[in-house]
Amino acid sequence: MRPKITYYGHSCFSVELNGKSILFDPFITPNPNASMIDISTIQPDFILVTHGHGDHTADLVPIAKQSKAQVISAYEITEWLSGQGIENGLPMNIGGSINLGFCTIKMVKAEHSSSFSDGSYAGNAAGFIIQTSESSFYYAGDTALTLDMQLIPLSFNLDFAFLPIGDNFTMGIEDAVKSSKLIDCKKIIGMHFDTFPPIEIDHKYAYDQFSGAGLTLILPLINQTFEL
Ligand code: NI
Ligand code: MN
Image (cartoon, rainbow, N blue to C red; front, top):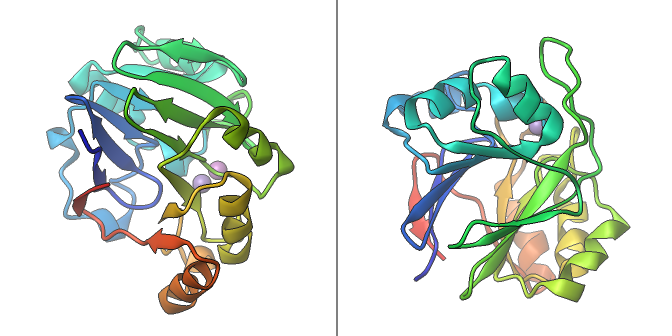
């Protein structure tokens, strides 16, 4: 079954895989570009969180509470969540994998920082690789271009990848193209762009850079659902 993807803006996506839905980095209500989305309708089975920054966690607590989804994240983030009354976290750390039955999830390194808006420590920033019997994909989180990405294709044959391309806080367009080569993946979904003025991008330039390198870039529209 092909993964069904819905974009909620910034770096927030839901991916439906084998009848289960995984939500990544919930940040919707503070995003003016995503004002058409009613978060009470979002009922994931799992929520994956890459790091503690507000633009990845703003709606984490309400969506985790309403959906009773299991939150998979760094140990420090699941500990912080238990302080908010969310007890069913599944803590991980970089390099580890877990098997959820319908998929396995590996937490990989991201070159970034991580803390909560209240100042508390949120562990190390991370990315995730999700693998089913039919497909695998990489959700990079917030990261710089890093040589560690070369390790990914040694173990995974990625069908597609979510990469940040907005620059300033993460990779920009050129580095995301280089990253696509390091991870050996030709189909890239851009994220972490256009939400705030410092990360606004030129869409035509982005498409040209990717197609010039033999890669396919998807810049999804907010509230759009598509299959890959
Ligand atoms: Ni961040
Ligand atoms: Mn961010």
